[in-house]
Figure (cartoon, rainbow, N blue to C red):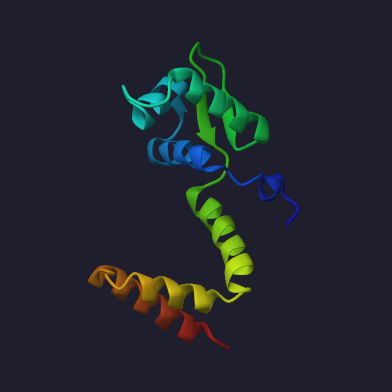
Length: 132
């Protein structure tokens, strides 16, 4: 994996909040991000601006500055970012065992919905069929 995007730093918790806005809404201005995340309460506009500037310098977002209000968009997809975090958790916390992660997650969250359990069963069945 030598592409530039695989070498990006993992976003912080505050940066992840912004990433979720960008993934849900698509390209957005600082004002739009601020209104969704903070509204009238919480951090100020300048906090959202500073976070997006830091994220831009880290390569986590791209910025279109062709208009008066800069528009930011996520560089990586939500799925790719989730995969990076998950791979790290599997390695560091579960010593590389994805099955231990799944067993732990399901054991500690016994209130999975029927739809979630159906999705998990379908995945397990597909994995079984794809086995050599």
